[in-house]
Length: 285
Image (cartoon, rainbow, N blue to C red):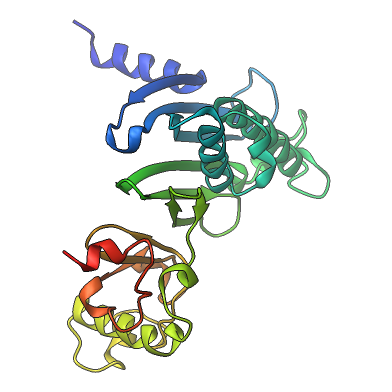
């Protein structure tokens, strides 16, 4: 039986070494199969056995499709996943695992430049420990999750939590919907009528008021909101129930409230939804 000290040493050893492994996550609908690659790694600012130097704690779980209708469609779907996960079209030139490797390589270079460069923290091998700022220790957590799929629609979210120096880190959720018929990312203009921005803010406001149990729009200010202007932000996902918006910290409310989700059933959107959009099948149920 392992003692408590043995377990602590084992955990420390695991955290000190990079972990790269895949987890099978098969999905049957649409013929799409997924795989996940996980990276747990300490990225040192300075390659040294001395433990005084900063590092960045990297935790990534990247889920991506490995099987689809045909090779061409699979490549396109993988490109959508890599571009949205890493927020850069540069990575669409690589297969998912290669893209992750390239991202880690670029992240390592950028982190070391910030910490050791003269324009950053300017930490060198001979920098005394008491002159190393605590804010030079960074972290980055990122993962994605499949939220919904059917024959024509795939919705997923990318969640991130990152610290790059300063007073506090940043976190958020970015949502995406793929039209599986033409393998493009859906926008609000694809599902709503042209004048949707006139009515949708009021619908969102009503849903937020109901969620926070306030009877007047001004009551949201006391809950931590910046005001009662809640406009659609393009950050949404779809399922068979409705449209789900995500508002990240600082968008409509103070950071302690976190990511604010606003779920709107299709029954409240019938007046502004396009009759032949990808979600029209859900309105006929």
